[in-house]
Length: 190
Image (tube, rainbow, N blue to C red; front, side, top):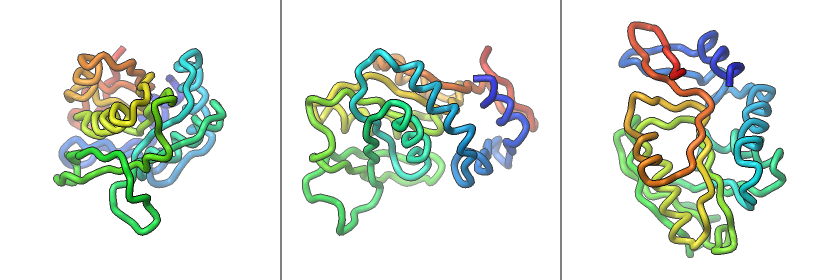
């Protein structure tokens, strides 16, 4: 998706440790016009799969999933990272290790929102090591629903996540695939 790649090059910042920051348009401040186009592209890519639910993980995936769901006319379900009083007691759970935070947490989805009749599309902002997607995949499988695909806005192709998901037979589409981030430069997979 050329519009997204241009935005990454123009507004993305590379910080210490070759960390790509896109918080000015994707995961802190949101460019709704850009995210609407992202949602349209995911809808085009997954149009013929009979999607009934979009699943994401709080918090950064929610806006992207919502704008995609608006295009597909389906609900969004998001996995919660923390227990709260308003979360049902009966949940589908999975452990997810966060590379950036260095912690493992349990994600939860209420059993009332995913069932064996659902055809699920997972949407997230970044794919690096793949742990969040694998945790969401586990929740889909435990619910009896069918995972139809995974849509990622930015994939760090130089890390293991995309390979792990593809090796697991997952229908993966990433809108911007980054080959490398080195010395303040971003190179995309062609």
